Structure formats: structure tokens, C-alpha cells
Length: 175
Image (tube, rainbow, N blue to C red; front, side, top):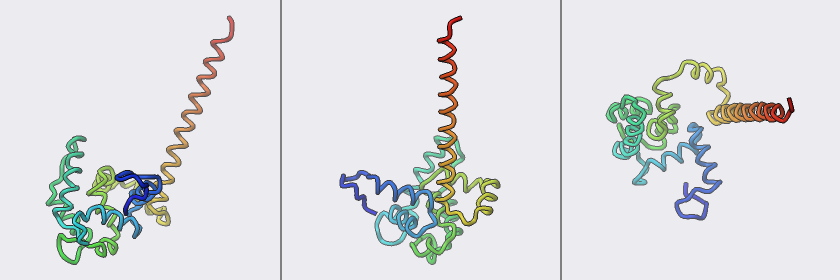
């Protein structure tokens, strides 16, 4: 998707909205198309090992910075092939990804280290929560989590503001 901001190489508000929707819910056709176009560097309609390696090298660098044990690209490629089962081994087409329930993980492995690590460690609490809320999309889960996080931040600010006022009032009281 080309940016519509009007400023070359810059993301505007509408561009950011499409990006965040695609980042947080990689189960929709729109997001799969978005990420497929990002990774298909030569625009030939196929994602091949050299294109995946290009992005995975950044993930390796991030793993090393976080003192995570790096996973060899060859092992990742094998895992991706097992996960997606492309028609032609090690060559992924958009149709292959659209027919795979784990396509979001395919892109997370290559782009989003936090989600990749979460997938690798498969938190049982998270799996249980997803099963209980099967009707929710990934976007719904993200929005709910962010709402709760922001609410807690706001409550924390209110509490600290309240306690600061109490301290200020007590300082003004003569002895």
C-alpha cells in the first residue's frame, strides 16, 4: 500500500491507521496483503528464501541485543514451510498464506520479535484466553488490552495527583 500522506517516504494518519490495523490483526485478507507486499521485495508475487532472510537478519540482531538464543534461518525456513505448506517448497505465494490459519505468525517471525517470542514460548494462559474469547479478533484483543492499560495509567495519574494535593494541603496548614 502506497502512503497517501503526500510527503515522500512519510506516513500520515491514514497510513498509520492501516499500518496498526495490519500489525495487530494479521488474520484479515487486507493485512495479509499489506505484509505480503512488504516482504515481496522484487514484486514477483512470490516470497522466497532470500527475501525472508533479509528480514530475519534484523530479528537475529534484535535477539542478540536481548540476549535471546538465536535461531538459525534454515530452522526458521523449515518451520515456516511446515506451518504454511506452500505449493512449491520455500516459495510462498499470497494464496498459500491466505489459506493458512497461522499466516500471522509467518509475518510475526519475520517482523515482530515480541510476537515471535510469544509464539515460540506459547504462554498457556494466553492460549486459554484466546480459546475462551474465540469470537474476538486479534484487533479486538489488542484494543481491549490497550484500553485496560490506558485506564490503569489514568487511574495511577489520578491517584498520584490526589496524594500530591493532600501533601500540598498539609504543608499549608500552620502548626
